[in-house]
Length: 172
Image (cartoon, rainbow, N blue to C red; front, top):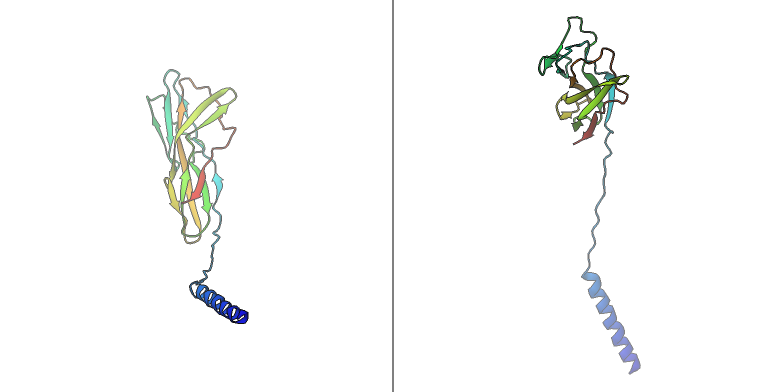
């Protein structure tokens, strides 16, 4: 009888195991990742406002477009002499994954100084503006301009910035 019960228990156990195996299924999935070319930015040309004449009694501004064109603004406290000096918007080359879009982050302000004298640059603009797209060769030219704020009687001299003006690009 013991053999009979052992045989029955073994058959039942096999049936239960086979039921559990048939109630279970497994599938597999592949995994993929594509590493794209890192985005980089390289400065080609410095931003240069050029020569500016200043009123002794009135403040003013000089607006430098990304393409390097200058105009005056404000209350007329500055003029742009015919001997303009070197004038250029900053120029960069952005490179990365072909045909990808990217965002452009410009500074809100920068200070340029000559000894203890300084001026603020604000209202930075770029071309392309705010976003760009890399060409099929993975390149894009990026130009940057800004507004120079000049106080009345700003002392003469060559003004430069001690820290670089950061222009950041990131893939969208």
